[in-house]
Image (tube, rainbow, N blue to C red; front, side):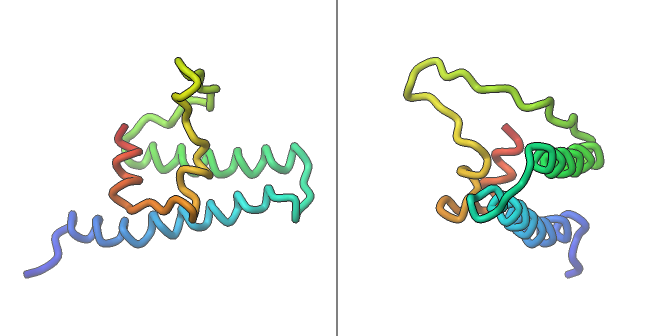
Amino acid sequence: MSETRHDKFVRLVQKRVPKAMEAIRLVTQLSSANYEYTADEASEVHSVLKECIDNLANEFGLTPSPAATPVVAESPVQTVAPVEQRYSENHPQTVDDVLEDLAD
């Protein structure tokens, strides 16, 4: 039986999304005290990556995410972890988890 177009998509997304997540995690590590950067440089890195994500959303026919806004918790217990914490090596995600997060 030959591979369907959807099977091919699933096979490739299972390889490519983790690689993209790892690449972003490595870029995020550049924010540590081991490196020195200006606010303009940090902003440029963020802008370039956000533009890539917005282009991805457009290609899939999705609406790009709006500019980040602070999340105000209704109670001290309800907080939203930053993306670098949600998708760090200390909290590994499967492709299914990531795709589910994207669907929310």
